[in-house]
Image (cartoon, rainbow, N blue to C red; front, side, top):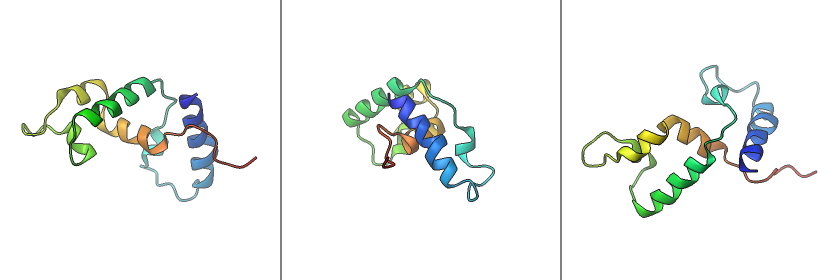
Length: 94
């Protein structure tokens, strides 16, 4: 259900509402239907156990912050696009 609602939001609402203002290099153009929701939810739960001040630090290669688990299961940019469009229900009133 999460995959369906997220994809519906991306295609039917976000892209349709912003068609004239989206830049050619926007990450939205790279959207694909995702079967990675279980990975996303697992990482979000793990982030609650392993706190870092900024989300990008979970993918840091700095030896002080390096946590190889995150970069081994999902690319940082892919994680951010999934978070950006995550939806659980249609927000348009019918």
